[in-house]
Length: 269
Image (cartoon, rainbow, N blue to C red; front, side, top):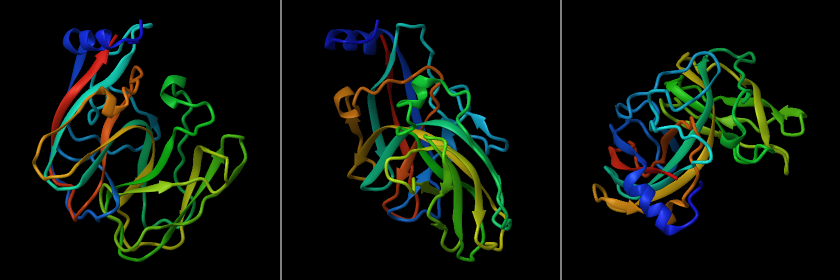
């Protein structure tokens, strides 16, 4: 049965949980106030692979917090977390990495890439109108120093299509950078990304791709290397569906991500 009482939660934390371990190395070349993915940071969990063809992500992938899938009606919840970050005033978000693809080039100026969520389970998707899904352009290797815009053509939840506002990549988009893709039509949500087109060559091919995630929780640390703890209430006791590919992203406060160390529990009940 699902957890509905505090006593059930306490019992699950003590007797039926999967352990989370986080020990991520710092990534250089970050930008304060911008979002960076820790998918490729070395440490624990291990460094996630750079995707090539489009694929649905699962908890079996290296790079995410592994946990034991449960048999219904038993449900999993993110119930306890502790963190110590190398940088002060750091915001860490835990996302379910739903799907990804990579291998796009900073020197190609025609339409490239595509990503859908076909085959994703409804419990990982969240709301059926796709409002729980966050779409990104994710960088795996630096592209060139020429300022260009990236325009994504998308399919909305009502099956209409259109272009999003151009994303300014700036000079030399760095490894691990995440650029959010935001709906251009009020009340509509992105169902799929059909292509990405650069306005000009950046000068260096690099490697980037399209990633879809579902935000699960966010926490903040105020003092570098000080352990902060977050109980089920602070985390929102969010459900963790079977096969969820949980991984951290960071809103950076300085020019590197800094180390991220911590742990926690996914409770089952």
